[in-house]
Structures are given as structure tokens and as C-alpha cells.
Length: 272
Image 1 (cartoon, rainbow, N blue to C red):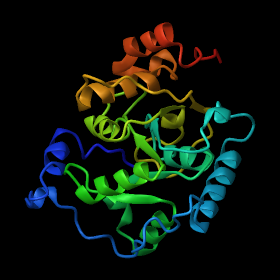
Image 2 (cartoon, rainbow, N blue to C red):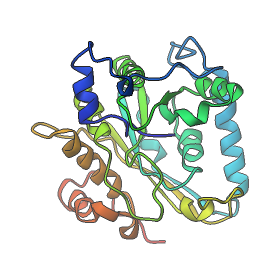
Image 3 (cartoon, rainbow, N blue to C red):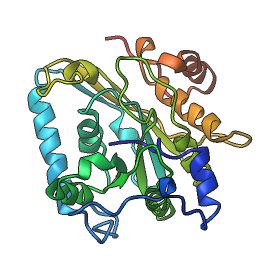
Image 4 (cartoon, helix red, strand yellow):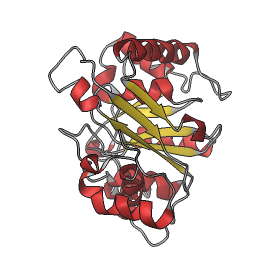
């Protein structure tokens, strides 16, 4: 699942003018098979497709990572309601299964449009509360959907770097994360994944059995006053980095340390 990397300053300009109709700004048609009524349920509960897929993800990952290879930390800190932005780093294609399968409650997420090419998969993704985004453009339909999720008290998963990292070490957060948070100030739940990059390397079809940790932090309300989109995105990135071991923090190595030493919003990363 992709983050809001398609947004940012360009999206802010597009949103401010409903008259903007340049082709590069307009989203494509909804994928074939995607539910015409989205979300499928509007009562705050998971659709049955969501429930089934979450169970499949949990069973698969617990089987793959049996013998103590899967560590889940801090699930008791996940709020029961929203609005909430669930901000995660991204290392492999296993990450959506990890976060989507083990994050409690009903959540929403953007996914790159390419994942909806098959009508059956588009139907399944839609039933799992994911919606397509045209990356590299200011996709107004995806933006409106994200707006509706947060305005309705929902919880939105964002991969803050916008795409998978090639190796451990966070890349700079996409400004679209800041754009969404500035439009809808709400608590942020930082989430950190480690080890998944070794479990499913780019180009490899079958995952390997290696230790993976999924760590949920403490929800935090950021002081975003005076920050532009990128500045707010960097605040979010620092919160995620503070949950990671030093070798995974990348560009946010210093900022993550500052979060730990100043705000103490998350506990120190435990030694293995």
C-alpha cells in the first residue's frame, strides 16, 4: 500500500482551485471491479472481505515466522477510535500484511493504482478499505477519500516514505503526509517495522524465515504550527524513527534521538 506521496505542495494548489482541470491533475477512472460504494460499510465495522483477509494475513505470517521470529510490541497502545493517522516505515511487500493484519480496529489505506489492474483484486482491495491513488500526480479523488475518512473519525494508514526503501535506513518522508495532517490535525500513531526487508527482498517471490518486529508507538499530537507540508512530514518521520533501532533510522537518525531524549513519547528500543 502506498502513502500519500502523490500529494504535497502540488496537491495543495490543486485543492485550492476546483477549476484546475489539467490532465496531470485528474485521477483516472475507478478500476474495474472496485466497489462503486466506498467504503463498503459506513458503520465503523470491518467488511467481511477485510476480516477474512486480515485472518489470512495473520495465519500466514505466524506460520512463516513461527518459533518466535515474529515480535509484536505495543498493540495495547492502539486507540479504539479516530480520527487517527497510522504512520509507518516501509521495507517490503510484507509490510501491508503485517500492519493490516495485526493493527486492531477498522483502518483505511491508499494503494498504488497498479495493484487494482485485476478486477477481482480491485474488488478485494476495495473490501479491505483500501483505495487507489495515482502516484506522481495530485489525485483529487484519493485526496477527497482521505478527507472523508478522517472527517468521519476514521483511521488512515500512511507509508510515510511513499514507497519501499531499498535497504534499512529511512528515506525522507513524503510532503503529502504533512499535507493531509495539516488539513486534518489529529493524533499520529507511529509504527515501525524491522526485518521485513530480509524476509522478502525485491525480486524474490517467496519470503524467507527471518526475525521481524512490528512495533506500535504511543499516539502523539504534534505541534505543527508554523510548519509547511515537508516540515510536518519530517515531524512524523522523526516519530517513526524513534521506534526503530539506530541502523534503521536513516535520514532521521538525529531527529529520532531528539524525540527520545526530549519528548519521551516512546520508550527506548529494547536490545535483542
